[in-house]
Length: 184
Image (cartoon, rainbow, N blue to C red; front, top):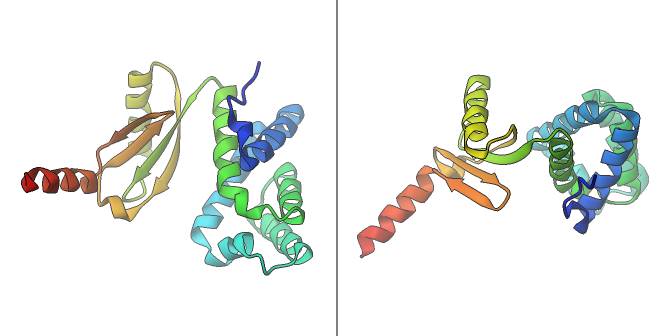
C-alpha cells in the first residue's frame, strides 16, 4: 500500500518518507511522531533552536553536536535523534517544519485518518480540540488528526485545511470581506 500520496515530491517529503519507513520497520511510528511534535514545539518556543536549524553559518559538526544535545534535553526517541543528526550532517535542518508536517500526514494515513491543518489565534484547550475533531469527523466521515498552529494575526476564529479544502472562519477574513462589501 502506497501511503506517500505524492509527499515524496519535495525534499522534506523524501526525508519524511525515509524516516517514516524507518519508524514503520521498527514499529515506532507513534514514538517518532511524539518526538517530532516535541521538536516542533521547541522550534516554536526557542528562537535559539530555530536559529540553529536555519543558520548557514553553523558548521555541520557544530550543528550536529548542538542538535544531538538538544535532542537529549528534549527526550526524543533514538530514531528521531539519529535522524536529526543526519539532517544536521546533510545541512537539511531548515527542512524540519516541512519534514514534520509530511511525517504527520504519513502517520495519519497509516492509521486511516485524514489530517487537518488548524490555525487559531490562541492555543486551543484539550476540550476544544476534541470538539473540533468530532465536528471534522462528522463532516469528513472518518477520523481526523489535527495539526495545530497559532497565528495571532487571524484575530479569532479558525482556519482549517483538509487536503485542498479550506474552511476560513477567521475574524480577519470576515473583516476583510466586510471592508470589501462596504467599498461597493
